[in-house]
Structure formats: structure tokens, C-alpha cells
Length: 58
Image (cartoon, rainbow, N blue to C red; front, side):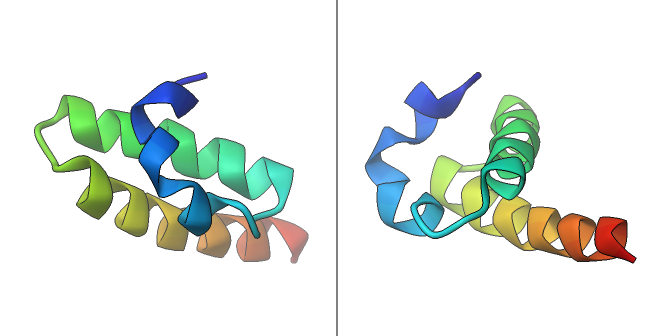
């Protein structure tokens, strides 16, 4: 998807489950498009994606 925008942040993404990583990149891309700095966007999106995953597991 938009993983190229976040190539320098591999350390933040490497330990994520594939579905969480995909969701985080999706959310981070939206934040960057809205004007958020990539590093901040990815950190926020990762936290939200992890919560999303935990909620989806019940």
C-alpha cells in the first residue's frame, strides 16, 4: 500500500502482526495526507491499529 512513505520506520513496524501493520499504514497514510508529520502519524496509527486488533479479537 503506502509502505514506501514509511520506509525509514522499519523498526516501528517489524514486530507488528501483518494485519496490524496493514491497518497502521492505512491510518498513518491518512494522517500524513491531513498534514501530520510521518513519524507522529505512524506512532499514533500504530497505537490505534493495535487497539483495533485487540478489539476485533473480542
